[in-house]
Length: 171
Image (cartoon, rainbow, N blue to C red; front, top):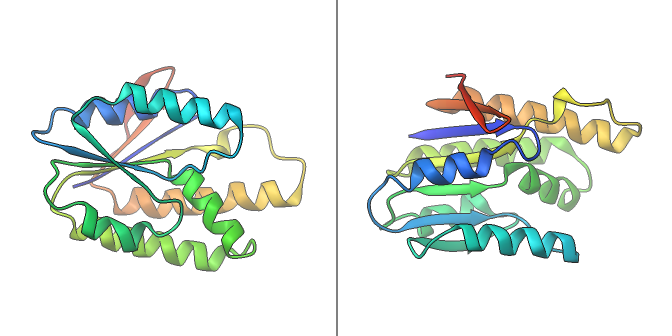
């Protein structure tokens, strides 16, 4: 089962996905895509670590999700990938701001998740609801994230939009 959880910043996406997965028996796998590059991001990562209990294993993978998930998922009750948007950003810059190879990785991730027997929750940001960015690079990335989220939502068995901590089931 593939579940997409989207919404704006601080909308409750991660908590919602984590709490739903914690209903699964056994150990759970948290896949972190963030690379803490400053003190503020280090604090966010630490806060997320503290929110997860002993039930959670952690895999830190900023780029190669489709390569690493198949080997990491067996034996756990479910998988939470947080955050797809950071993963997209990592890929976008690794591929020299080219969208096509990033979207190809999104397609690989979808295939990978479909092959995993356990529930997989993907947390992503809905970037298209805010102010139009004032520079080309930010607009291109916003568009890329929107296209990627559309592909993920189409492939998902369930999709939720979080706003003010409240989930709206989209699919």
